[in-house]
Length: 73
Image (cartoon, rainbow, N blue to C red; front, side, top):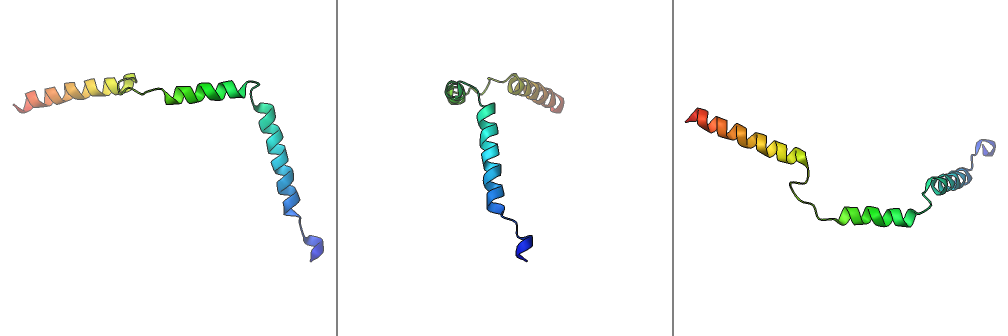
């Protein structure tokens, strides 16, 4: 039964080492600068009308609501 034993710990360690190497190779050279820019962009205040989709939805809803009220009156 020992002949069928697979050492999973070594395989997991080797896999982790490969993943770390791949992550290091795919990371940008200035990863700290990119991280700072991403955090700064994430922390910018959000306005509710920043997206044109929300504004379009609100305008469409206002027109639909007005037309419905006019029809019901």
